[in-house]
Image (cartoon, rainbow, N blue to C red; front, side, top):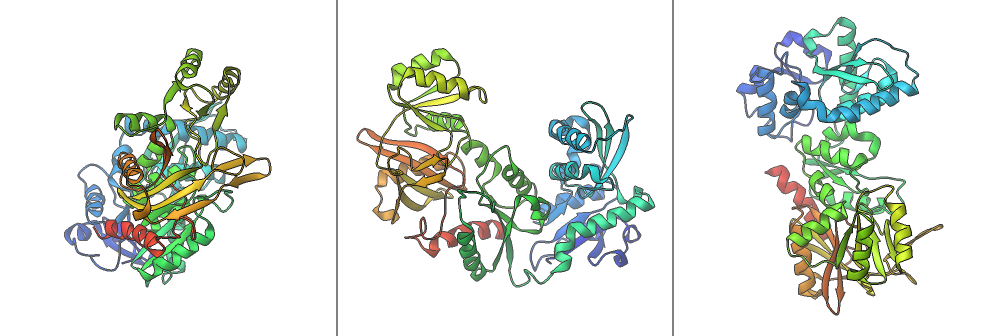
Length: 486
């Protein structure tokens, strides 16, 4: 069962004639646990008349999750929409987007009014971008938003609107929105018919230094076909299509403040296996958090001083000496990492960086010819590389006005790498989770030091897989397959 299924309390609520998809009653779904036991994961839209606790609609979504089906809305969404205190954590983001949309459209409403959103779409095109964010937070077929205009527009209430309580025009709009939400499957139902599972790969076609090139993803696609996994590329504008897939592989540079985190969070809500998962992203993208976690687990790291105020600069000078390295919490690909040679340079740099963050990291400068990178998947080594410093630079990537310049690399068989490097990398990665990580380790005469743990490490065909070849990609595929079959 790879198509969509519509659940209704009574067959007259949404007749089969109004949709090309199968319509069944919630009572039939609840009574027949093996209804979709073969042919893939069913995708279900729950149009029950009530989502109240312990109603048929509630139990349908609850049991759908237990049966491994993907369902809209899920129980978490039903519960959060019951009362304001449960959904108020989303209101700052939603109200900011709503206000921005209203200002762009020069909206002139002055009194409180209601807006209906169906699968993120709205009859009023002015609020299209807000609707997408709303559906990102709450994947509910129909949501009514009560809004009070002002300098900052306010959301007074969110509530699910049952199909049975929509007026004629609203019901027609709902049917159109449902069609648009599922039209990809309606348009090409054979696209993934031969594949047992489907995997979305999120990438950014405009990214200068992506974790995997498009050519690499195409290589991965070909290997996945052999294991009956259909791999499709998604961009940041295709969040609404994510629910059509069984899993998500993020191959764009991750950040808590952008679309990559929203995709990861959505995948988790849908019950999908995902690399990188939201928790790993939170832990890995912040170097302050990483340092604290590594220190608590006894993982060796460079001598480090947390910088929050001027007196910390003096302490850093005494403990670390010159030169030292200063890092912003959430830099990536060598960005946001600075080397300073004296106190005046340190003061000037931190004054500038403190405009955007309350905390910085100062670390002892540890010059090496290369950094070890150990790829770790599910707590076990996946690949080992040496990344050499960019020519004439102290980092593996040198950023300049004409772009970035990288140093060379050497890929090793895992058995050839120093066992102590593998061991410390595994300790660091296992402290984060059971996903895919890249652990950077410096090897110096005084010992090893973990520099950072990356939640979306580079994986490029011909580089990281130079030794492991297809086994690298097959292990990643098996990571997904194992979770889907479980």
